[in-house]
Image 1 (cartoon, helix red, strand yellow):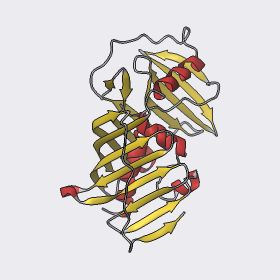
Image 2: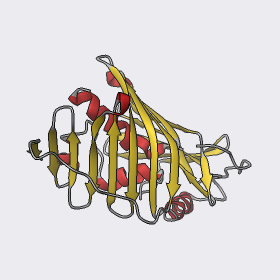
Image 3: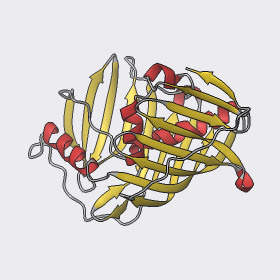
Image 4: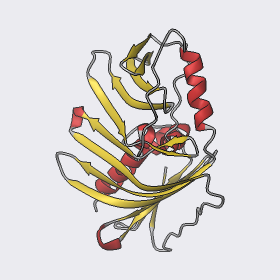
Length: 258
């Protein structure tokens, strides 16, 4: 697996922000008049706070004009600030890992025997993962609990059985589709000033455990450069008591500090 491929795997996992997995509740009618945007944001936040930790297994695939590939992963997460994702290639080959805390991040690529480490500022993270995400957004991604922006929306309406909420931020338009029955963002789009689509993410396969809706599958498209990423959770455990965050780096690994 090349450096780009290893990083693409991680990007797909981070993008799990909008993911979801199995039986569906009876539909709850969306009504933007009865549920104002600040109340909807509070509902999503309350749902997210019911998840203290997660462990899971799954697979991720990616495509680009240059190449395509896939990998398996094991994930451990504990709020508010610990995440470990271990990657496995074909035939059980160790592909590396990503560890993230509020104080540091460590990404190890076993194929190149190389480590990237540093303080997880958006700029440092962007140096190893080709997408700009904050620490909080990465943690939110793995819980499937992305929060709506703390701002007044540009528009708020009912779209079928979901809420459609749009925000103008830093010269781009961000649109969220929220399912009120699951209290999750099910679709997200980001467009630039000209209206060109930069990123589209679509969720599917909702799994419910103890009344909590959790991530199962997400697909992401980056139309500008022809990239497509998809993540699939084959198993998830919510509120695991002792998730493991142990990892090991070979003593001869090359290190790059961001």
